[in-house]
Image (tube, rainbow over all chains, first blue to last red):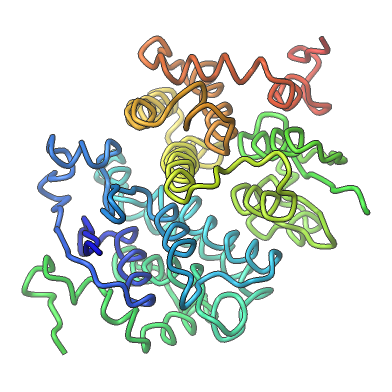
Length: 215
Length: 215
């Protein structure tokens, strides 16, 4: 079987979700870095793979799939080993609800193309405001669902999506994470796991040398 | 079996997705309107149902579910009659990819709470820019996937999510829809179907009288 190819950018949280999932499910893959700061997502070649001109895209099973959550669901349906969704429909709905709170409500208004469209003088305030806004609400959701991880004691797509968002909040948007003890606890716990560790931006081949970790 | 209760706002595109799906699957439901202009989503009572303080929420099978896409997936898993996802995993991924392009990339940056946070003088420019930005890309995706509807010739979640977005683009964000002939064609076709017609904002009990249609 052909090895999947991931079009990715080391700092992209949507790419990070796919990297963690591929690692978790022990699916080997090749990496093609797309440098968003140099607008490589807008080349004709990449646009033919993903007309939305965003990362990630995943070439797998003879097709190029786009949109990280569609890819996660596809991987779960076609590679059910090491599941990342619970079996019970109500628990699955709780996981997907957290996923959408992160990928639909929290991430889109703080991503690179939106921040570039906000006045330069207001960007720090903007990202801090929205990251804090969504984390207050996600922390409240987690108070009802979390065990060791976001929903109960098993790793799910909710954790896969939470970690990049928490990393960005803490390191890029200067959010005071001490206000979000459940998120912080789950963040620390996940980053002890190999699948999450190896997917971290600082371990990627396109990470600039000054940030790179090779421990 | 208890009748599901939908917490909804007539103009909310996320509520509209659920209304169409419930209609499509012929699931009867009761409506509790939450007036977003009067901040009813922030009451203690509603916050206990949905800590994210957004509509919709759906009380069903003894639980309160939140996030429209999590609810759509739940309804598909527990009420598989009149399916809204194809059987083939790759086609399912195409549907979910379009869904996420709409609900993750297009909708969040033009929703009410974000627009309120953009300077007043810039709001029209902001919503027009982002609605056009995302429709250019969604039109390109549809060029590869559309038949009579978004993906092939069957109604799917992609259509359910596209219609409210197209309505908002045309009627609220002043997007020139003649640039998006595939979106426009699918929009017209869907609004001929009863499930879509009955879910339209102007047919809802909380629609102000001046907009209301009772045809």
